[in-house]
Amino acid sequence: MKKLRLYLRLVRLVGVIALGTLFAATISLLERVVRHDLMGLRQRLTRWFMARLSAALPFRFTVQGELPREPMLWVSNHVSWTDIPLLGMLTPLSFLSKAEVRAWPVAGWLALKAGTLFIRRGSGDGNLLNEQLGRHLQQGRHLLIFPEGTTTDGKNVRTFHGRLLSSAIDSGVSLQPVAIRYRRAGAVDEIAPFIGDDDMLSHLLRLLSSDVADVEIQLLPPIASRDANRNELARRAQAAVSAALAGQPLIDDTLAVEDIAA
Image (tube, rainbow, N blue to C red; front, top):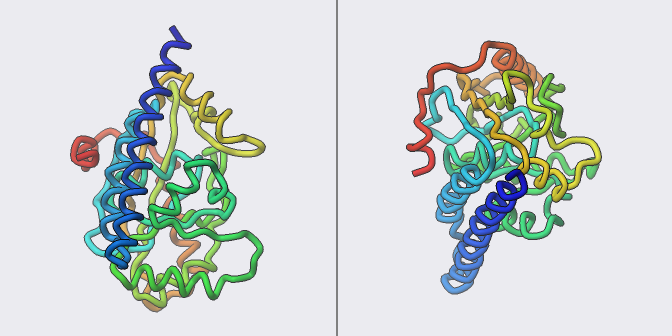
């Protein structure tokens, strides 16, 4: 029965990825024809794809808080690659990701076509990257980064680094802190975290073989960037996320999952 469940989930996941690949290829071809960047359309289709991808994963998710009505720089703790579809289903978003993801088969190409910006750790191009992020925000688009710089086991929040928050200050946009938590049988989920020497395929098979886990997403009050410096913003965002994760499990949802996946 466990193997049958794994195979059925794999089939569903492959179908969703195939559909996403078709959409991405179609948009790429259309952009070549019209010779115009269709980022807005790409983001909307990406949100639709992320909702279907999230539904294909063995999670029950609850969302608390209000979606921002204006473009913001989203900052979240980081537990797994699954954070991306689970947060990407909420609203049209672009992501900042480590450069290694670009080399992942299929997933890396899909991330590129979805408008993901890639950063190579230790490359020393912080100013250039902040300018790139700033242009994205100034065009009225949401952008999400993981300021911890790496994934964790979900038990604690690591230091939020402030060097990429200059883009929010320079663009005059607020931060949208997000806390994401994975729980299994009332405790911290030890299967969902993508850490250490995990490889994508092994982690995916382990995840799809597991029972359904709970994911709690909290959209916290925005933090204004005006008259703040990047390190102060990082400390405030980290404190807000840490406090949210230290609280009790969510009970009431202010966002309906059906509305998110529509």
